[in-house]
Length: 504
Ligand code: UN1
Image (tube, rainbow, N blue to C red; front, side, top):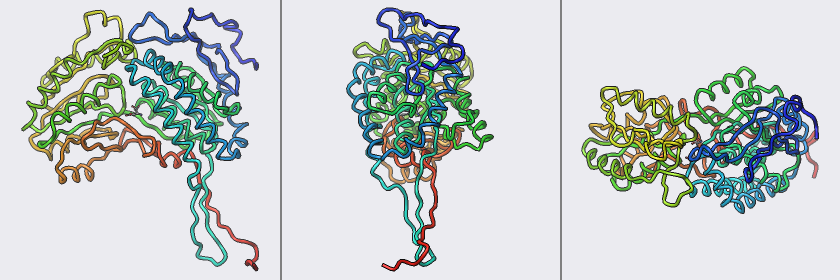
């Protein structure tokens, strides 16, 4: 094993407690324990029970990872596409085979419910499968030439070494939709996941290794934001794909801008659902609940604003509040629990503070939730599912809280409701509940969002269609579907003619 700087600081990493997995980094084809600071992967529902332990990677590991990615890139890019696709398809099989165990680990380290955790591992498998099948799609386009005997081809080539920086809230699905297309199109990848969900990152890297991914094609480094920043600005990286907060996303864009480096960011959201006068109320309530509280509201696509037509507002709010108040909140592994904790105690406290400050302002009325738990859940990072009615504009209307909080405003008519959907610096997703074709057409034409749902919740992203936001929600080519090719490949326009006119 190659020695790396600082390894003298922690020559023998302490053995983890019985049954607790040890975190590892994958660097240039070898598993390293890491010699940086100790990292304890916390279960936000049971903070005393570590999910995994390890040590973060050092800058020297990053150097080795990027060097390996650079070195193996030409071979990987030249590997027949069916070989690459087979590895992606096998990765899907490995993920699928481990869905129960890894899904449970995901729920423990991230806090989403067990069905959501298992479902996410399966979703990651579907994404790998989709990307494997993409290999047989056309690899470019052919155009006629205005000159005799010539043809013009536009061919797609991999970009090179891709840096992938991923967030905590989808520990495998988001990495899957970055890493699978990046690898499928022939790039090599250095991946820095959120240090809050390191175990599922290790699992995904294990799946790729088991599937036969050659050494160095993917490296995994677990670390903090500083390591991520080093990776993003590393001189030997060719492109950066990032999902995370708007603030960090802007830094990533700034660094890549200075370096003239292709960048794709997927950042915040403050997604609205408009419930129009003719809406099916039961459906709207069910979908808003799902959008607001699944994954404890920790999705950039979560429904965090609702605008309801005044005419139906009381009926809608009565049902929404009643169902929110009876939502079962608890340990995400327990049967029947519909919502787990947020990711950390720090996140819990930040959200609670924003609610407390909001509740003190005029025009802010908490309809249900809003207070810290005073039972056994107070030990975990739990936040009550909360519905807040706002009389008008307010920081709670504008700021992304990334938790189980939904704010509601009444609109005098459907048209104003649609206007309020657009009243945000963000533009990721929106939902409109109506069967009125005129309102649907207006929504499609007017709303500047990357994803629009008619009669379904704001969250969700299928692997075969583009995903990403408008305005402050994202920058650069969209993710997923065919859109992924725009980011993970570059094109060469080939003017092709023989030196002599063909004689045959
Ligand atoms: C989904 O809505 O299922 O961070 C996916 C997020 C998004 C992914 C949402 N990038 O929440």
